[in-house]
Image 1: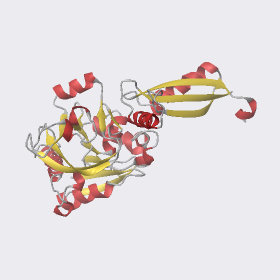
Image 2: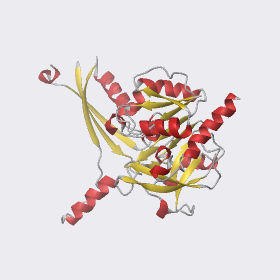
Image 3: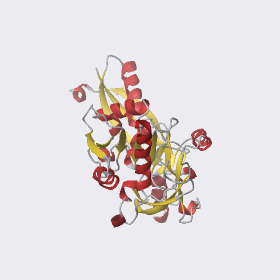
Image 4: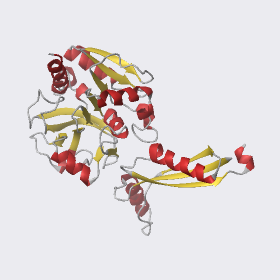
Length: 89
Length: 233
């Protein structure tokens, strides 16, 4: 069975996101004063071949924890879904 | 005595490190290719600066998984001296050989210029030939050199004398104004608990010849060589 994984990796809230802050400042200077708390992260997608949803989720979490994120500075969240048949081919 | 300089795809200070060690210090130096499993009996290892694997994912994140790094980890665990410079420092943090991480510079820009660092701890194998409080003028060249660690880790580094270099002004004052990248505690270099692994953002290999505008980096490599001589004696 093929599963699709989507992972978001974001800087931990305690860490100043200088990139997000710079984009936020530029949004303000473009007249969007009502936009705030801009944070920029990474979105990673991949496919997993696994026997069950539970196994696929476990693999996705392991990959996210060990490789895709650095726990010193980042958090991640994982979403796993069954791939449609055409997509799985 | 033999020193190994690791070459990752994207390393760009490997030849500078080789030149400084081989020609300015005069010690036998070999390149260790990232795909190798053999450390070729080196006595110390340099992880040089650059952009290993294009800085993909995070600086140093991919280099950690290269075959040679497995050997470097083993070498360091058995007490072998390892110095990571710039990208090498980032790799050491990603590999878990040093605590913390290097974030984007607080000013967002890549900074390439000579700065000053103060020798905080000269009782390490990397600084034994330097004086405590000595000020070195050495270049930095990085976009992600903003040292970050949790408060408990910072406290531990400080309490155990593991902060080896701090950014300072020309007179040696450790001030926020002299902090080029926003590093906590002005940290420019730290060692691990055993004291045999050093990571530093400034480039001592680029400060080993009068032609390059500074020879202040020589003391660091001399210290490593001296400590190896003492071990061999």
